Length: 213
Ligand code: 3NM
Image 1 (cartoon, rainbow, N blue to C red):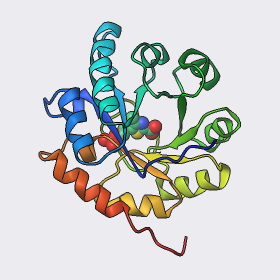
Image 2 (tube, rainbow, N blue to C red; image 1 turned 90 degrees about the vertical axis):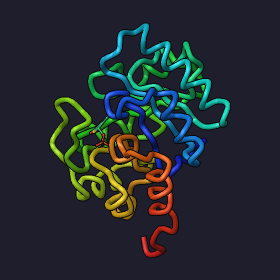
Image 3 (cartoon, helix red, strand yellow; image 1 turned 180 degrees about the vertical axis):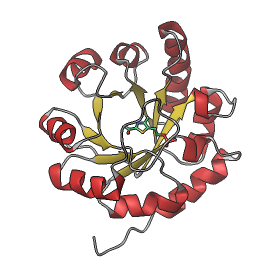
């Protein structure tokens, strides 16, 4: 069954959380009404990543949210996450799916039309495209695809489309209007001094989409 993806996809990256722990951030996000949370930590050792992911997983589960682990299908499986998100340099979608097991979400990043097409043909449950706008949250980020890239991705896939990169309260609505089903946000959300207030602003900006799509 195709999944219905929430319009706001929060990504917790420890380096962007202003010194707050991943667990603390997850708790605020969930209390603010965010249902879909990914945990990403490109700097942690496997053991550290596992320990933090286990804490966040428990918190998301208690709130009946959906928890996705970035990159590490093995850790997603170990902590009983709802899925894994893989990038172009991570395990291929089918291998990640094999590891996380049946009934789990596998999302895939794409940065070019060719990669979007490949992701569309894979068993990925959703396809991400980005960076839509410049971002400082990813080391060696790919060239920006812009709103035109989101429109092009929309034409290439009927899978749920997640847009990522430089998304803010101010531009999120335009990204959905360009055809994304969901916006994935790191710094625009979790670097805010008051994450709860920022989450509220995002959720408000993402309701009541234009009817003339
Ligand atoms: N992936 P922020 S851009 C993790 O293009 C990530 O696939 C990207 O962070 C991609 O919301 C990105 O702070 C960073 O810009 C997104």
